[in-house]
Every structure is written in C-alpha cells, then in structure tokens.
Image 1 (tube, rainbow, N blue to C red):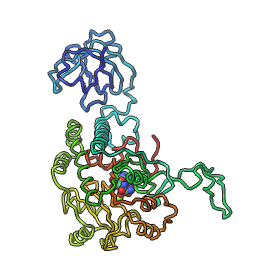
Image 2 (spheres, rainbow, N blue to C red):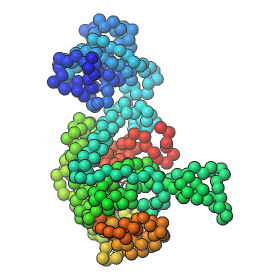
Image 3 (tube, protein in one colour):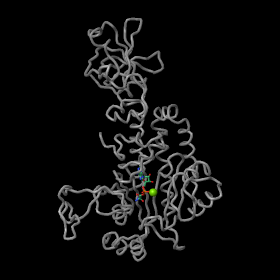
Image 4 (cartoon, rainbow, N blue to C red):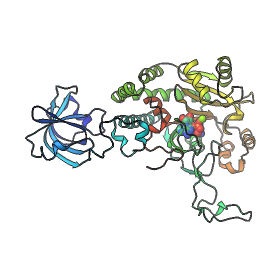
Amino acid sequence: MEKLSISDARNPEVIGTRAVIQGWVRTRRDSKGGFSFIEVNDGTSLANLQIIADNTLENYEQEIKRLSAGCSVSIEGEVKESGGKQATELLAAKVIVHGWANPEEYPLQKKRHSFEKLREWAHLRPRTNAFGAVARVRNCICQSIHDFYQERGFLYVHTPVITASDCEGAGEMFRVSTVDPENPPRGDSGRVDYAQDFFGRPSYLTVSGQLEAEIYATALGKVYTFGPTFRAENSNTSRHLAEFWMIEPEVAFNDLDDNMDLAEAFLKRIFGDALTKCPEDMDFFNQRIDDTVITTLQKIVESDFIRVPYTEAIDILLASGNEFQFPVEWGCDLQSEHERYLTEQHFDGPVILYDYPRSIKPFYMYVNDDDRTVRAMDVLVPKVGEIIGGSQREDRQEVLESRMREQGLEPEDYWWYVDLRRYGTVPHAGFGLGLERAVQFVTGMQNIRDVIPFPRTPGNAEF
Ligand code: 4AD
Ligand code: MG
C-alpha cells in the first residue's frame, strides 16, 4: 500500500485515498462512541494527523488503548474529510505498533519543558513542535541559499575544514593534531615540534573558508562556500557557538557597494522564502516565540537597508546620551550593545555599517584612501546584532604585505594568498553569513543553541 506523509495526507485532494501513514503518537484519547482519537506526527508538518481507531480493530484492547506519547506506529486506512479543525483525518483499518514509550519514563509527556531543559535531551527534542519547526525552517533557509547563488551563476566550492592559516587573525582556533599529548616530540628548544605532527606543521579547524574562496573567485568569478566553521572563543552568549555554519560568497570584480547589494538581496531572498514556504511553522513562531517575527521579516523584504559609515555610527552613539557599558570613541570595536542600539533603537531595521578603522579589522581588507579605514562592512539586524561580516579585499600586493606585517603575520607564510595579487590581481569582495544567526533571526528563537541540532559551546559536546 502507498505510503503518505502526514503533510500530504492533510491535503483535501487526497480524500478518499487508501494509504499508510507512519510516525509517532502525540496523544491518544477515548471517545464516547467506542473508538480512540490518536494524534500522529511524522515531522513533515507542524500539525498532526488525527486518526480514528474503532474498537472493532483486532488489537484495540491489547495495543491501541495502550498507545501514549512517543510510541511509533504504522497506520493503514482511508483519508476522510474531517469535521475538526483539520481538513482531513484517517479512518484506521489496521494499526501496527513498532515501539512503545513507557509513559512513566518518557520525558516528553504532556508537560511542557523549558528550552534549557530540552537542551539536555538533544536526542529527543526534535520530537517537539518547536524543534521540528526550527529544523524545517533551517532546511528551507539552506535550500534558499543554494537557490539564490545557483540561479545567479555562482559555483559552490568546498573549502577545507583543516587548515594551517588563521583567516581572521584572532587566534581562536582549535588545534588538529595526532601528537601524543603525554609525550609529544620536542625540538632542541624543548618546545613541541609540530614539524613531526601529522600535517608537518601546526594545523587547525578553519574559522572561515574565505581565503580559499578567494583563490577560486580569482579564477572562476563568482563562488560561494557553505560549510562548518569553528571558533575557540570562550564566549558563553546567546549568539555564539564554537561550531557553526557559514555561507561565504566571493566575487571577482565586485567592490564594496556591489558587496552590500549582494548581501541585501541575499538576506531578502532567504527571509522571503521562509515566509512563503514555511507559513505554518512561521505562524507557530509568531504565536509562541516572538509575535513580531512575521511583520519584521515582511518589512525587511520590502524596505531598503540603511547604509552608514562607521564614523557616522560613532557620532550617533555619542549623541545618543546612552550610558553604554563599553565607552564609545572613534577606533573602538563596536560591542553588541552598540550594534543593538543602532539597529533596534536608532534605525529600527537592518543597517549596513562600513568603512571601519583599519586597526580593528583583519589584514585582508582594502585600505581606503584616507589610510585610516578599510572597506569592511557588517550587516546588523534587531535582536541578533551582527548577522553578516565582509569586505572588499586588498588587491594591491605591497599594501597587503605591509598590512600583514602590521598585524604580525609573515607574507611568506601566506605566499599563495599574495600570489593572487602578484598574478592578474582584480578587485574582489565577499562576506560571511552565519547560518545560525540567520535561523535565529527568522524564527525569533532567543538562544542560538536552539537553532542548531547539536550545539557546541564551551563545556558542551555530549551528543
Ligand atoms: O565576521 P566574521 O568573523 O567574518 C569572517 O569570518 C569573514 N572571513 C567572512 C568573509 O568575509 N568571507 O564571521 C562572519 C559571520 C558573522 O557575521 C556571524 O554571523 C557569524 O559569521 N559568526 C558566528 N556565528 C555563531 N557563532 C560564532 N561564534 C560566530 N562568529 C561569527
Ligand atoms: Mg565579524
């Protein structure tokens, strides 16, 4: 017999079809008329399918009446028009129980648990409405990301997860090594000799695929990466993960304005797709998590992003009269309180800040004629703060080399990166979108740990 997903079985067009649905019981209750109502969910939609199981079914007393939340079932029957709030229901002809879930022990009984508690049950939380909805919206965003770039002729490039270079220069990298920590090989100085390690040099998990994406962009034009990235920063915030996914487009012959245009079109596309392709899940977030998410996304899709130079943003912050925890002055790195003031209070919408001081940005950003600022850009959105970071890249060999030295890097260590400027250099630009920050923004979920299936944060790597 044909299998039907619950999402398909809810479509009135299939009324009259005989099919099998398979999933996990959410609730079961007796009805006066001598039958049971069973609510089943299979993850294909937020809503359950209601099953009518008559007491004449052969396993009614021994099995069907014992069904409780978490039990897995296959149910054969006919899709009928429903008198309830759903359009359809299934009249069961046969109920097969695959697995029981002892109601005395199963943690996801009726009682609602906090998101903090559910983090302890990362193996069960996708069975809840909220985590099912997050998983579907996250999937929709990923599809939309690929659609956006593929439709525009970008090539999807796989950059390495293991690398020897520190792209962001922040030194927040996880070491990848096979040396025996109890008895490492040592050089003459007594220090660990990584020349004898697996890769013959110190190696790490990547913080960004950008440098390698630049290699492909300066050969193939328009590329993007989409992969896991790692940061060993010890920040226990609601917006930081030690392992997260980043999308990094890189485009030859683009300048900073082109880069901003691309970032704006990109965000509008994924926000718009979430609204049109996941309406049921988005309604759920709007009702249960944050009653502004839908209107906020709609407004963003329809309006232009404000673009403001860093210097002007500093003036706005200074003129705000706000007491910030971190003092504001030209040259300071913006803290999340500053970013949030700008995007939430001052502009009340997405803002692209650009032309940051050179001293607070990595070596690869293009130095402006004023010699004090670089062609950097950050896209800030309400509640989440920085969602995208990017720049036009330094394409002049001498300037790049001097910027590297200025930041304590040896151009020889990045000889291949310098070569891109030595041979056929071109203006080019790109940025990185943190996937989880995007999912957080779209769903309104407050903690980034609840929008990735298995969050990696300081002290947490159990599942
Ligand atoms: O601003 P970042 O550090 O930029 C780069 O890595 C550049 N190499 C990107 C490029 O130009 N190709 O990171 C980019 C984005 C941030 O704006 C944020 O959305 C996300 O990655 N991000 C994090 N997300 C979760 N947890 C963390 N610890 C993150 N750090 C950055
Ligand atoms: Mg950044």
